[in-house]
Length: 112
Image (tube, rainbow, N blue to C red; front, side):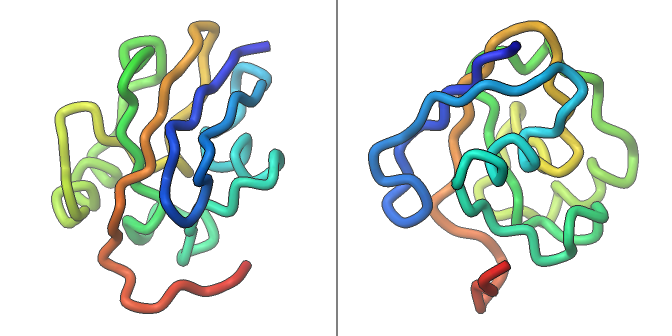
């Protein structure tokens, strides 16, 4: 199992969290399975940027992003070199430290 440390986010995960995920699972699916309600307006179909995260540690251990994800990330609020869409970021064997940005481009948060 790979450990994912979710840094504190004022609304989604105020105290932060440490969760475990099987390699091959996406960061989004791991978070959701552990009660961290990360926004995913397109239902994880790589069609929006609401699940944007920044991988602070372990970024290079994940599969590379594809062109579609890269194009979408260009529209994400607070884009950084280690940004990924959590619905596309597949967990590898190395532990991760993940930050959920303060804002998304989604004007209305839907409760999934």
